[in-house]
Length: 250
Image (cartoon, rainbow, N blue to C red; front, side, top):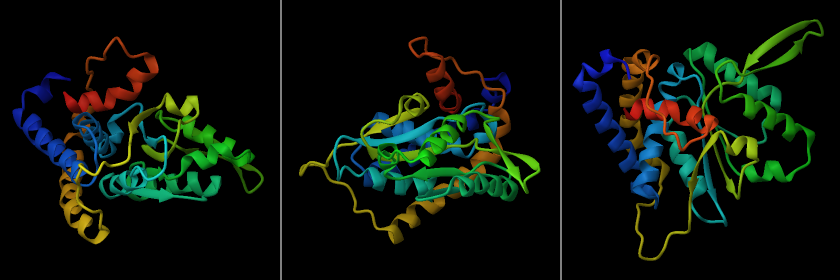
């Protein structure tokens, strides 16, 4: 981190409390480990400071079987993340135009969420391969696609921005390298969490989103120059993926 950020202890105090409250929100409805809750809180905060990041990590809610609360985790992420949109059965053209529209409206990239992502990779539809290519390019700033408009005009569409997936099994290797896995399992009878009732959940998440929005506006600029220490145990791509989260953690 840069010295000017460390000179203000309120940055650490406010950020730490916000992250802790986000982690508690996840643990309120999901059976997850404290480490998973910590990563999720950092990832959510990063969606509000995506303009400070050169790369953005993807999030992958995954399990080996059904009924492990993957979709619930994605739904809760939808309520907390910045400018989130859950998509299904979307055309490729609609996808990159949605990203462009959000950037034009809010000045920043949306958070896209895709459920049952394993179904996409099981299909041999060429469009799914095209979607995979867009997702591969979208975790790095400047990632874009070129499309021909009106038969003569070539236009560049940005596909950069945070994305979260939910599904059974593994992602394709190229996407898995860009993703942080949140491995879920079925809840035991001895494990207890609150039921996820959307009308009640938004009462919990709305105040958090307001705080996150204010936090992002206050600290995104300072995070642009952050240079967190990156663990040597990670390979180059893993370091790129983790850098925005470690900058916030610092």
